[in-house]
Amino acid sequence: MPPTPAATALAAVLERFEPVIGLEVHVQLNTASKIFCACSTRFGAPPNSLTCPVCLGLPGALPVLNRAAVDKAVRAALGLNATVQPVSVFARKNYFYPDLPKGYQISQYDQPLAERGWLEIGAGAAARRIGITRLHLEEDAGKNIHEGVAGTERNSYVDLNRAGVPLVEIVSEPDLRSPEEAYEYLTRLKQIMLYLEVSDCNMEEGSLRCDANVSLRPRGEARFGTKVEVKNLNSFRYLQRALEFEIERQGEVLAAGGRIPQETRLFQAADGSTALMRSKEQAHDYRYFPEPDLAPLQVSAAWRDAIAASLPELPDAKRQRLQADYGLGAYDAQVLSASRALADYFEQAAAGAPNPKGVANWIMGDLTAHLKAQSREIGAAPVRPAQIAELVGLIDGGAISGKIAKQVFAAMLETGETAAAAVERLGLRQISDPGALAQIVDEVIAAHPGQAQQYRGGKTALLAFFVGQVMKASRGQAAPAAVNELLRQKLG
Ligand code: ADP
Ligand code: ZN
Ligand code: MG
Image (cartoon, rainbow, N blue to C red; front, side):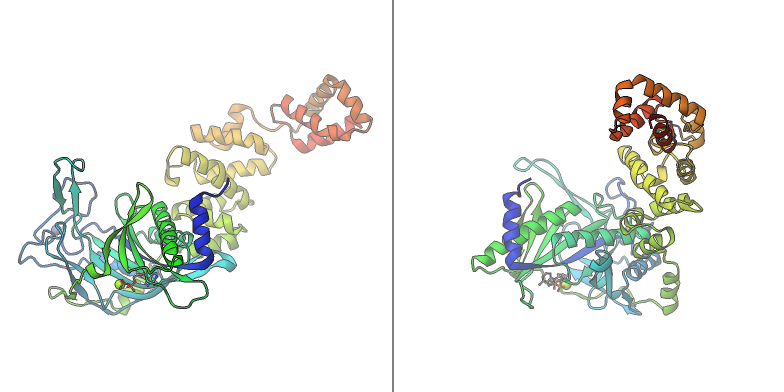
């Protein structure tokens, strides 16, 4: 395919300029109740049904910190290799918006819960650590809902069910150098949060939100350029497209001798562009000050260590172990460690199996394709891990060919039966009995006298033709090695 004009323009910018990108990611913690009150965090309840005087911001109501939110935030911080501070401080971030009834958001400012973490992107020799500046706890705001079509009469509503739901904000260092790296960083971050089970990371429901900061500098220049912040990135695809658009836009301004003003822009999903939201001069002054209604948050070493001891094996470690323990390649290990559930499934299937690579292939191939087609998760797989191991055992033991195994597996997916049961029911056991095979081979040779003569005259490449005919006559059930051997004998 020829490159699109946009791709060419982007390539021209990238020749002269290097992008510098840092992400600010909000992750909604999956606690049962809100961060400062006992209201439920359930998604999709009738508007304003999950509220109380605290999260409605009624005068005199006092916040009480939810211990589970701190627990999960510390988990997230440790999973990102960050240092958890023994003391952190909640602060009021003051601004007016209808979805923020108190007139301020309780967040953390100059003393965040955790600092100086990292996560790894890339693999092998190309692996790179992306720095994480800080991770802090805060409460979510409510949601404004706009009704009607622009230009006609319309109403706006405020739903405060989400107000007070716990979030962690995770701020990266400006260490990312391309939209692809930003995409990968967010992918890894989400994967780690899912492994830690601190969030469902559902982007459509807003449990994972991302703002991107991007600037350009001439290649070879050490200083950073002026950054632009892009908001409204509701998917991984949007993040990448917004960055591509912004890099091209900034590159063209700079190449023409212009300056990039510091500003906040909104991604427009309709055409993939970004549009000015506010300039630096219009930036909010949030007048942060320490929250007087909450004591400083103290996380003792004992608490932190107990959480550290409870962390599961994380994706990097799992990838490495799958390679070491099962002899898998880097790619297979990465695919199989996409989620804890998938890796567990693989390990159950491969436990004690002499051929883990064969097990991996069936899981990554036919099983994954089936699940995808059915929009199902691995937890809802119609066959148990042991059934995969058994199927691979039948192939390796010569009871069925790899080709027949596809048919067997399709039957297993449909009925849930074991591999052996499917083989018996469908009469698919491989024919390796010499007498039965010899009979088929004789019939095939007799049916093709011309080709047999050519073979005997030296056109030995015809062997493949005969093998094919025997496989066809046996409905794929003849043992290929034995067929080859018999044909050579009888034609030779
Ligand atoms: P602000 O004061 O505007 O919040 P910060 O320095 O706190 O800016 O950085 C916010 C985010 O922007 C971080 O993710 C950081 O990595 C990123 N960032 C900072 N400077 C730049 C830059 N020059 N280019 C791209 N990203 C940047
Ligand atoms: Zn409440
Ligand atoms: Mg900042």
